[in-house]
Image (cartoon, rainbow, N blue to C red; front, side):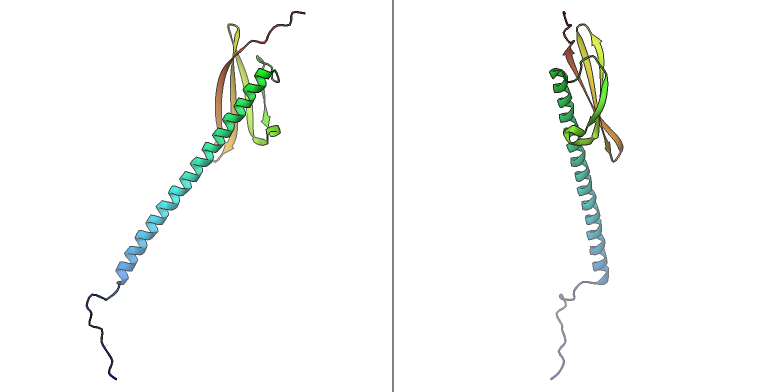
Length: 131
């Protein structure tokens, strides 16, 4: 039996240089892909925190309308009772003609330090007791 030689000139395989170029391209694509996914996750997380902050600010407006918080009085606190102890709130008031401009600020810790959401509503001044 005599050894056979492969004479198919087109089937030589990949060279080391071609493998290195392919590896560098694949690595670059993977790095860009991971960074994109990471940015998308951070953006979605921050959007979720802002949505939670808006819902919590709306609960403060409801508490003001229900009389649980006094319109015209500045106050602050947290949302531990609502299950969100990392969110804090501040309510300030400005007096207008028969109305109060109530400024609600909700703050929470974020990767960039502290983020906040501000909401302003106009509410009627509380009725005076006539007794």
